[in-house]
Length: 533
Image 1: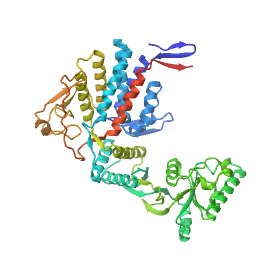
Image 2: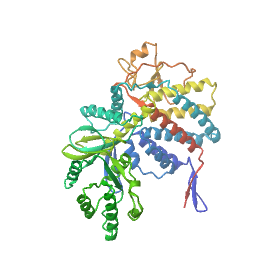
Image 3: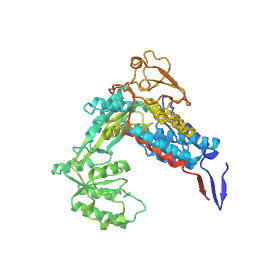
Image 4: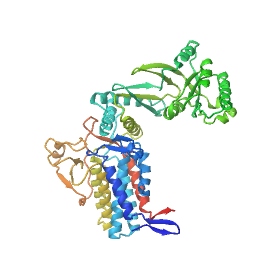
């Protein structure tokens, strides 16, 4: 199926050979990043920069694909806090299978779409139930530490040692609990990675690194000696040191700052660099200057102080200081890792900072993303305090349960059976497993091999004895297996979080699964890809 030309526009069927080839290539790449056999990747930019990473979000951000279907799917994958590649593999695998069957077997497209939408409803009903979910007990911080540790270990971040992981998980939970205010609103946690010996700290507030040639600590001490306990602040998000700026422009900035100082502003923050004449003016007037904050710190500063960022020099004359200023209730100087920092805080709107020091900053972005994913899991179980078996056990349970629900409907037509098997295969691939695999007849969890003596299921929750005590058996499952028995009441095992049990956030996985089904349903209704010349 080659691309065709119509009035200057090129078009091709959405399930053309070229699209299917691109989908298969991307599917192979994403699959190689998940599961027990996942491998690290060398990412090489067009400029020759080489980066070694195992983090799915980093890989998704760096990937450049030409096929519009693949690009559309990657856009969704990139914005996920976790389970992005799980969602991506689900979508790609379902599309590849269904479009291939449509192309080869000439199945009626509308019947396929209707069947898939009906199957989606059944899937969403299963996901909403708590038949295989386990409620989290927030009375014990130890349980939360186990959950965080599962996330950290599963991401295979090579710079982490066992001793470091123990301390790190405790500090992640501590920062998370401190970020919940009295109204049970979860505040943002700032994650800061620094060079140094492996350690981690949790601080109430945000950190600004003091550069050696700065004298702001002297200004701060002078302010404290004059009993300044409240700091009125303004924030610039533009460069105040542009060589192309005229003297007239600098005068405008200085005039605005003179007005600000007269109205009680005693701290000026700037996302970028500041001109020497502005620095001199601020220090002479006893005003603390925080420059070169960067976008992330500036955003955190804005959120914590409730200030309105100033982004246009030419509109300064029209600005009312009271409408843009923010508030800090404390500034302290702290030292760790042979560096000095301002610890900025606003007790009315506090924010927590988790500082991670590592001797290996090669994978700094990976390290930070792993922590963000652990925090996302904690946020997820706060709003929906349920966990699902990990390591592929939930996906196997879901596949068996879905098939048995389908059997209850009576005889299935060819399309219903084929679409169910397509979803089953996509789920297995998205969990990092491959055919054939084995599941038990009691709990329907996935097992690593056929030698079950003193063995546990993949997630570590079910033991050999648990299955044997219920007269269970182990069944081999391949991509053509279809369970013929009707649905039965599934056994549920008791559960306590531990380092040996792999669990996933139910809400995060549910959201990824639902999003994948919705996107797949939308893409199945697409007929042509049109390229405008």
